[in-house]
Length: 275
Length: 312
Image (tube, rainbow over all chains, first blue to last red):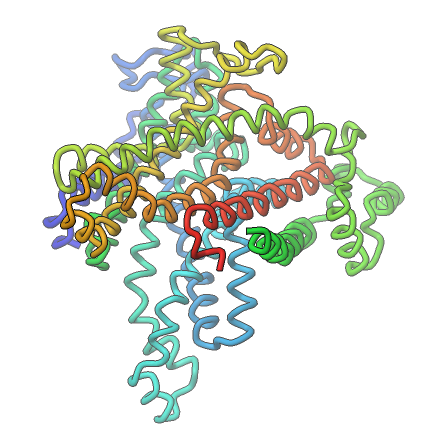
């Protein structure tokens, strides 16, 4: 990772952006000047500056504190949904590629169908049907990311399973499970994890979008998308309510994309500087 | 070409069936009884049974599936549970707005993305290239509702160049265009970012090919090499991305329509979600599926036009 950062300045900037957000989220209880849900009724819609560095919202809540606490939700949902997608999608792809034949064909066709559906619409409908809470959001976002991970995990397995060391494993009588998870998995892990960092950016974006539509974690819990939604209702009187959470989302997504791009270039030299 | 079109049309049928099956599964597999969700917690057993019969949920699952596929393929998407109107009527009323937005964003994305991508590839690892790469990365990092709100704040509220509300009158072309500019710019800029990246990458790999070196060696002017030899071969991945991106565009249009208060498919879907209009939701998902399959088909046919080898 440090080598990658040295070789690609953009990756360093991306890593710094991500670290700032992660530090903000972890240190929120100490950094946030106020409780994110404390309503200061006298100080409603106060512009940035003074006691409230980034201003207050329509309930008199401190925007900076809500952004810091909101980072926790964004990161928690993104990390857990992508972890679920990697575990389920990765396993499906590995098994599909390893088994091959008709089963592989059917599984991959199913994944292609899932892939062809607009992810936001899919997430929207699943959350709406399940009900908006943290677990359902994670499930919905994970569902939109399972197919790409299945594809990414499957491709290298197709060539790996023909290699001599796998044949040797079979000759030694290793079980399929052992071959898959002990011998094949370590060889595809880096590719899957690099993709994970790029998809993390998409997960942050999807979570924020769902919250903006009103299908995120319920208020008064601070989420960046939810803050933008509330800010949008006061856009004429208090534009800062939309601007600050918007910048926070942009910085995190940009940081994750920069890190993902750098890691991908580093793991696949053919792509270096090409995308 | 006719055989190629027929072959692609036939290949689209299994995809359509598969996507319809997915829609059926999503609506059925997700836990919870739609009848209870619609009627609320105080629903009586009789009321639930009556609604089950009305929605066809009392039939065996295989029959529900056969009915659903049959109705979808015959173009019967059902009626809204809230308004009672056929879903196609509601969709038909807003479809021109959605088509306007999708086409306009496609144009914005292509007009900006392709030349910038080519330009960046021709100046690889120079200032222009780095700037194009950074801007395209920023472009695709923007969730559309964030860029939409920023654009709205700047161009509609601060400089007052364009209207805030995007509900255009369809019979007035000037009004239609005026209210299309900001939403199309919002979606188009994200699309331009994707197209820039893919065009640049495709051009770079083509420019390294032997036939480009041969063309240059025999004295073909550089401009002609780029536009005629390189670009035509780099067009395939770009078309693929544009085709794939239309799916994302349809998803993102939900957010754009909310920000600019524009009528469209996305607005209807959010309305149906809020009103728990399950038949409308299912119908909309089916319509989305048809749109996706049609877009894929058009993408395939475009391949045939760009590269005659594909047709064989």
